[in-house]
Amino acid sequence: MPKICPFNALMYSDAGPWDTLCCPPYDVVSEREQLALESRGPYNAIRLERPLGGEPYKTAKTRLDAWLAQGVLRRDERAAYYMMEMDFSINEKRYTMRGFTARMELSPFSEGRVLPHEETMSRAKADRLALMEATGCNFSAIYGLYDDAGAAGEVLSAVSEAAPEIEFTMPDGTAHRLWRITDVGLQGRLTAALEDTPVFIADGHHRYETALEYRRRHGGDFVMATLVDINDPGLVVLPTHRVVTDCDAGVPERFLKAAQGVCSVEETELREPPDGAVIMYHNGRSYLFTFDGGRSAAYCGLDVAMLHGLILEPYFGIDTLSAQNKLGFTRDAGEAVEMVDGGKGQCAFMLAATKISQIREFSLAGEKMPQKSTYFYPKLITGLGFNEI
Image (tube, rainbow, N blue to C red; front, side):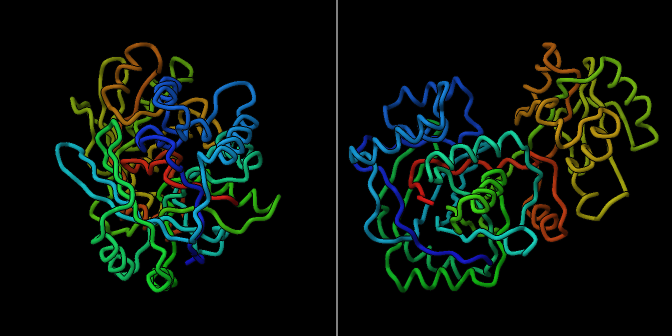
């Protein structure tokens, strides 16, 4: 595993209720949602993560400096690991997810200490690099998974017996708790527990690759990461459906005619597919596709990989580079259908949720899923601490 260490985070200091200060990561916040977040208070973290206006990166730097000078933000006096918990509900079931935030040493993927599972988009990386170069800060943590046979969990469970230092609930109903781990002995146990395990990136591929590029240009060996046991029962992954928004009008029909020779196709009334299958929606009708053969076992078992590799690229001309301009993404199958029916897309592909085990298998096999193959829910919150590079 890459080296991890405690750090002195930049933290809010009596700047208002925590639910007015924190926000989701920038990449899941629409402009309308951003305006709503900003209206909750003058110091919401979205104002640093993604400032509005013509010079957003300069604005972020000016704002960060002002908040430090005014005491809105302060640097923790003691280096800490920051343990967090999130309580949330989905499909009427309650979950708790636990992890801790650390500085994590940057390591190229080729070294095998940090393992990706998704492709990335160049536009998002250019944006994050400009923000890092302007501010010298990580505002959102990389979301990493580890498997240490429970040793770190013993430390975190002991810490959780004390009352949290920070506790609040966001408008979506997700409850957040935070503890500082400043005891040197406990810190040492956490560090030792993760020495021999790689980190699987769950979320934040763009930010991690950006941090590597920042290090190449400017130095700085560490990035802020929140690390969670890969066996944590609170880990939830939702599907991300695809809407084709830019293709010639006849492409979907031509594909349907040719698909019989590629995979099994049958008309269906389903909106969400079973594992290992994809549903295509076009002209008011739905079609179920199942695949077999062609790549590694990990690849062939993953519907989103087969969708991109066997359908979108060869038949629709949508590869990794063009996907950011020719696909729309949504977690709601109903919304995908509405986009097509409303003329905002030519067809939609509905997917099953990627399993945690598939993420591990893909990463260890050295293969990458298409971008936006996983959506970990809920997203790690931004605002509970920032890291100066």
